[in-house]
Image (cartoon, rainbow, N blue to C red):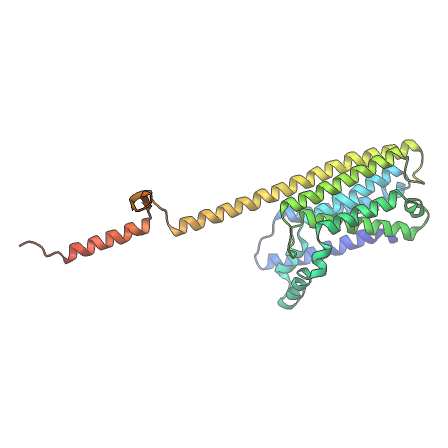
Length: 296
């Protein structure tokens, strides 16, 4: 039953997500359908990883690797894209919202959500699991097995939140920092799979052929997910750049267009005259005509 802790955490998040979404709909406010679909997909990946038939055969190393890909990579990525904290901030009352904002902007959360911290926790747990006797211990101890599942899930959520998360955090790094963290994590993941394959690891992983199959699945499956995460980072950058460009255009249109009319300049000979100057000239001309007496 302890192995179901990640599923219980996901279901609690899903229930809160549904309550917040209901409150938002009562206020006639919209919420992107894609984020709701991401929450449902993340919950499905978590359930598939810890429930039969996968959980019934996780003593086989390839099945365990599939469980690792679902629980530690795919599910956290979907949950990060659902933006649950942003939804909570939009629906919570004023005092709880302030408490949540203070927590998000606090220094410990900023350090914990930093890409470097997330990469160290994620890769450190995987290397400790597969390069030591932790995997064999997890196969014989339910408590260790549950701890491995919880760490794998939370570390994956932390990494996904730091790299592709949509929720507000203090001093969120730019796209290049997040891409660098993702590249480091991908390189560390690929190196681990090669070590598993070359050294016939992990201990207690069954026949050598089964270990090799699991290492190949970890390598290629992890690469697919990591490429998808990189594409999401670039897509987010593209959308943010597009919105910034649209805001700049709206501001320039509201400020008024500038016509390339030339007026004398001391340094460069001729310089463009803004439209506002044309208005002043036209008003002054009309005023001058009014002051001129008409001929009898």
